[in-house]
Image (cartoon, rainbow, N blue to C red):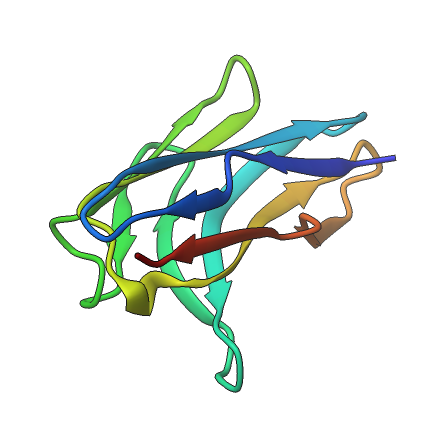
Length: 120
C-alpha cells in the first residue's frame, strides 16, 4: 500500500557530496514528520535529520552544517543533501515517515535503506 523508495546512495570520497531521495507512494491522507536515520556497522540506528510537515528541521550534532534535509509536499518526496562527507558518515541510510492513512490510522513507515560509503 504505502511505500517509501530511496535512491542516491553510493560510494564517495571524503569531502564529496551525495543527495538522497525518498519518494512516498500509495494511498494516504497526510504525511507528518519525516526523517533520515542511519546505521553504521556495529552501531545503533540514529536520527541524522528530521523535518516536520511545515519544514522545521532538526539535525544530529555530527551532521550539522554539512547535511540539509528538505521535502516537497507536492511530490511527496524527501531529500538529504550531504556535503563534506566524512568516513564516519558511512552507514545504511533509512527514510522514515509518520503517515496518516485513509482510515485515519497513524503509522510509522520505513524505506529499504540505501548504502552510503565514504572512503578513499
